[in-house]
Amino acid sequence: MTQRARIVITPVNGFRQLSTFIRLPRRVYAGMPGYMAPLDMEQRALLDPKHSAFFRHGEAQYFLATLDGRPVGRISAQIDHLTRNVSPETGLSPQTGFFGALDTADPEVVPMLLEAAAGWLRERGMTTMLGPWTLNSNGEYGIMIEGQTALPMVMMPWHPTWLDQAIRSAGMTKTMDVLSYHMAMGPDAEAAHLVPRALQVGEGRLGSLSVRRLDSRNMLRDGEILRSLYNGTWRDTWGFLPYTSDEMAAMIHEIRPILRDEHFVLVEQDGEPAGVALVVPNVFDVAGDLGGAPSPFGWAKLGVRLLRHEFRSARVILLGVSKGLSGTALGAMLPALLIRELMNRGHELPYEMIELGWVLETNLPMRRLIERIVPAPCKRHRVYSREL
Image (tube, rainbow, N blue to C red):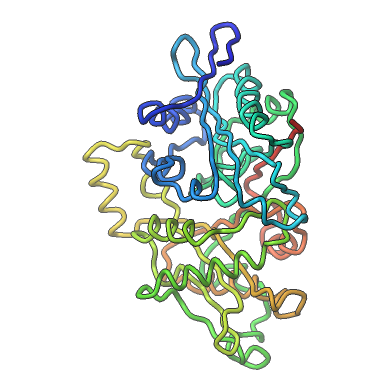
């Protein structure tokens, strides 16, 4: 237990405290411009050890900060054992521990929360603390630096503007920024012309390529194709941790009620997977006005909206290219082909915009591709580190 003045930091134990931990952001950020509460149900699937696939390869401890008994902040500390098998290019090692779920409306609480997480990691032999990731780099990512009033997006955390300064004042150092971009949807959108019209899948030089959608009868199989291509594409990238089969199966189970066949783009070369992208509807479009814990009437309203698929936006959450095409002209072109294929489905998908997120600031090829259409990011999230 850490105490300063009337602020107390305690580890989370039991269902009731975990529920307080899950609900805390919507309590401390309520009324702040741009904040919209995610559903508690989604956050429990992400954080509850009984439900989250993370705990099959990692361990975590959650902490709550209270002021005179009232919850005012939270943080997680976690160790992901997948770091034992990643390449040096990721910047991770088995001695890298992580923090996440850092939320508070009181700058005074920030250093105390960070020290609680650091102490837990230090006791377990970690020498570096990196984050925030909730719970690893395949979950919610970073502290929001820019974009507080932009459209809220599924799996993208929200934070007040002052939190960056509070974290750096507590001894954390910026390690990486990740960027998000908004692209207009539809076959006539500028992004639909990312590659020349002369280069069409199934024609000319691209005649060996074909494209298909999700096979809903074999969803888990397509999920494994997505996982394999994603892991192969990003395995030597900073911060990468592989998607496990359990995590992919859990994600598919969670998004299945809102997933359509056209959300999945698979480009094959001579029948073998070459590139893949998955877009997920933005749950905030249908649930954002209902709060984190809807009333029975709210749940009924949400059900109707889901049945009608009343989404206006979506997010590309995974994109991958076959490792065998790395360094080739086709490999360099495939991300643009995948994005354009999504844009060409504008007459079927009811979305006005899609968000491309988690683009590393150092990933200049991807940034140049996107910024040909969208000159500047709509959101910026930051990852920090410190030695323990």
